Image (cartoon, rainbow, N blue to C red):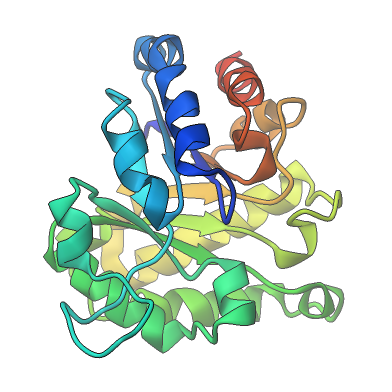
Length: 251
C-alpha cells in the first residue's frame, strides 16, 4: 500500500531564523506522522535548507529546484552534488511558477529528473494546466505531454522513485479549488499514462494534488484512491496550519 505524503512548498518565504523556528517545532508533528504511517516534509529556499535539515528528525527536506549539470558557468544555479553535500535527497522539479517565470520546459525537467534518479535522489515532478487550457478542455492533453516528455528515459526501477504532483495552475493561490473528483480523475489519468510507459511500477508512484490545499479540504482530496498526498503552499508556512492538515488527512 502506498503511503500518504504531506509536502510543503515554502516558495520564496521565510528567513533562515524563521525556518529554524519552524523546524524546532516539528518533533510532535513528526511523531504523529510516523504513528499514522504518513510521510511529511517541506521544501525551503536554498538558504534555509541547512537550517531546517539540522533541526528536524524524520522529516523530508526537499530543494525547490536544481541544475542538471554538476558544475559550470551557471550563475545563480545549484547543482545536485551541492544538495547532496547538505544531505538533501529530494527536489521539486517543474513547479508551475518555474514553468511560468523561468522557462522551465518538459525537456529541461527531464534532464534534471534523469540526473536526480541516477544520483539516488527523489524528484517531485510537477505538472498541470493553466486556466485557459482548463477552460478549453485541454487539461489531459497538456498533462499527458508533461508526463510523457518529463518522465521519459527512465526504467521501471527508477520511476518508482519519482513522486508526481498534479497542480492545476488555475487553483494555486487563487482560492479556486479543483473538486476532489477532478483531482482523482487527473491523478488516475497520470497513473494510467505511467502504467502505459512503465508497466506495474506505476502502482508504486506517489501522486500528489496541489492547489489551494488547506486544513478544511485536505481530507476530501486524500480520500480519493489515486491521490496519495498533497503539495501545499501557503498553508504549510505556519506550524499550526501544517499540523492541522496532518491531523485532518488521517481522519
